[in-house]
Length: 414
Ligand code: SF4
Ligand code: SF4
Image 1 (cartoon, rainbow, N blue to C red):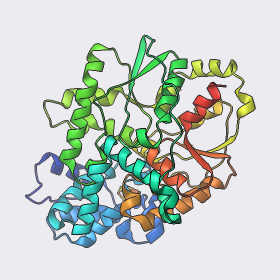
Image 2 (tube, rainbow, N blue to C red; image 1 turned 90 degrees about the vertical axis):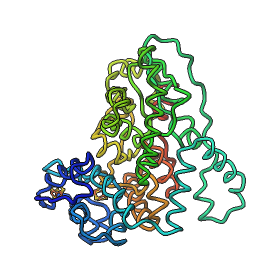
Image 3 (spheres, rainbow, N blue to C red; image 1 turned 135 degrees about the vertical axis):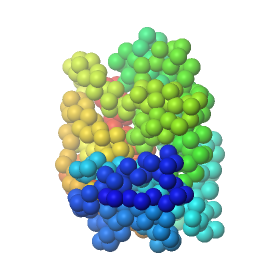
Image 4 (cartoon, protein in one colour; image 1 turned 120 degrees about the vertical axis):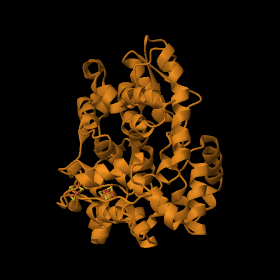
């Protein structure tokens, strides 16, 4: 695709990056069929190719309207289009860059702007989020049906976090909403890794990965969260011989793996951020490297009596964002679990960070379709790999939805 960027963006780092991405697109349209919003709405402007045209026009200085913003807002940033694109178009980066520029030009109305501001104040702050969640859980029994379902019940207790006694050590990201919504996920990860001879540590000063602010067009705020995590983790990397930074939420994982790229223009952080991204691993990648030890644990346990059929929902941030496919399934099969078939497994569940709040109608349609697909193989439980997907799916089904590492932990604890 030929481009002619406008002066306001030409020769800037973002402009150069956007230009290279635009030029890679050959308009083939292979991405259309895989796009969830194009499938639902049937409008080319709600497809990857249509949005690429809109972004190109904006970057070339043509007038931008709220209609442009609406079509970009409707995108889930699921990146399914990247998975099928034969030209390697990095659509996710292009839409991140473009949304910020569009917002500068057309702004937001008071209501939409306030909701987005409130999300940025609450979600990345674990204490604030935990307090509001507690309040919601207290009044939950008094709420009417729909509102009641939007407040998650009290989570499963986190159980024991084993003492750090192994030479092999890894760090884990607590994240922002996960400690309040599902504290057992990271504790289960610590117990599983402990059985494999690895101690899992937490850095108290680390927090939100930065994705919430970054994807709500507060890019500088998002980058500040990233810098804070780099500062919190660096002493562990320098002095404590940390082997990896483990992610149990694939939405955080995809972002931390991009720290090196996102902070590459910050001379004080570029090198450290690149090292951190290189050390970052989804828990499925960590366990895949320990497959032999896991099969020994399986041989010595009585888990075959406790197997049940599971449906695995692979989050977009795992399969499209991090390009990790099949690792979770392989580990669960090695544990003797039975996995049900899930049609259209490449499609987003509609959670997509804050999308379920900002685009409720589209999100609910995607949720309904996803729950039907997951339930079609008659599983006993649904498992997934990201807290956002987990809570969203749970709001739409009576089947129990859990993080897959909790199932593994339970099996190995028999
Ligand atoms: S598949 Fe890739 S190259 Fe083809 S239209 Fe879509 S983004 Fe462009
Ligand atoms: S990121 Fe997802 S929703 Fe957005 S254009 Fe690509 S496939 Fe469609």
